[in-house]
Image (cartoon, rainbow, N blue to C red; front, side, top):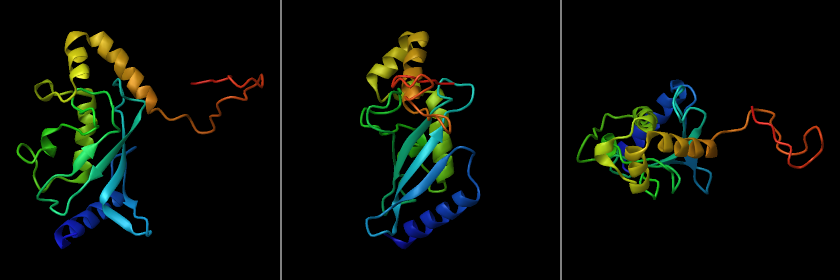
Amino acid sequence: MSSLAKTRLQTERKGWRKDHPHGFVAKPRTARDGSVDLLNWDCKIPGKAGTLWEKGLYPIRLEFTEDYPSKPPKVSFPAGFFHPNVYPSGKVCLSILNEDKGWKPSITVKQILVGVQELLDNPNNADAAQEAAYKLFKKSGAEYAKRVRIEAAKYTEAPAGFVAGGGATGAEDDVIVL
């Protein structure tokens, strides 16, 4: 890794640990040898309160190259994530992540994650990446909202102390969701 990329990512990591938006998670992966892999970060983005996405905590992966910060990282949700601006592979389509459009070397990990959070509830119709999600968004707001709620439910974490099955009746299918 070039010293510029390494230095920048170490600075980003240090800054994130001191100050990051509430509910967000961003940390470099641990390599097989136990060292920190600054080129690959696992992150989680909370859905904004008051939106269809609000109760989810969405996994994101940031993949940096040795050309960072001159070139943006690749940002991905899990494959198949439902959103008009997310390719079927999971790659996020967002102007600030496009080297030829809005990328600037001064953009931080925090700005990237907040930008992706904003994109969740505000799709960019001019830059669709997923045909099915885009068509549903354009055709029927109610059907799109229903499908988003299904997607969000996949990433909703159970409350602390939640136990599925083995409820008061002892039946395996006792499930209480608040």
